[in-house]
Length: 289
Image 1 (cartoon, one colour):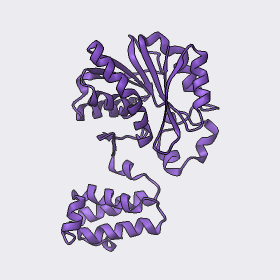
Image 2 (cartoon, rainbow, N blue to C red):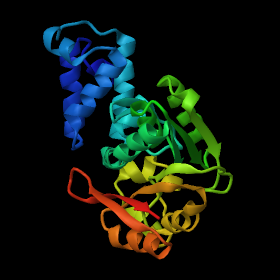
Image 3 (cartoon, one colour):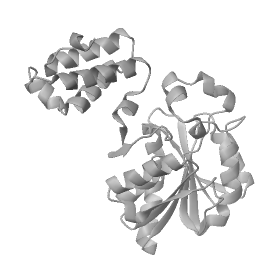
């Protein structure tokens, strides 16, 4: 099968794209480019200016293998092993959710508070619950130099991935990984408690896109019978770990704004901000005591 792919950059890229298009994949052109560039070590500019650049047979075979995985439903970024998030390259693993642009809404929502706290107090302590790749914590650390973060997860593999990302980004000295079931092993107080918790109702997981259902870890998706269990835990326990002027920020599902707000208001919080993603869907809520 590998012989069917051409061994020159431009034709290889076109053949990869047509193979993915023929299977009806929605982002065929982008996925083909990501996979070919990654495995060949080439750039978009080279594919335009040097289309006849020869590609070694082992590289062609690696592209062939990657295309087979993509055609079997595996997301392109899982095949690459990393994903760009807020301008950072984050490594992925089987036990981490693939960070998505929707979560950048949460970053934009809390950045002014994190910056302001760090300026006023000389530091900002962040607790990232369900840290996964470390996307939320590490992005905030990358922007705010005098912030420190603890990333909590139940999965050892997720924590190892977050720690690897922290080292890769030069942020390891300000990031602590902690294995804990929510607040169970957490100590101290934080200016910001942030979370992108599992919020899919258990019975809806089977209806998710194949790429999410089959490749994102269930632990990071399943929010219980109504999808709201993690919010109840956070609302009930966060106050004991918050600094006096602290904030809690959570990502939410597109239809969960009133339910999640109600859970926190009942626990003694008030809504400090509601933020929509680029698609106009409710995506992040900030709460204060």
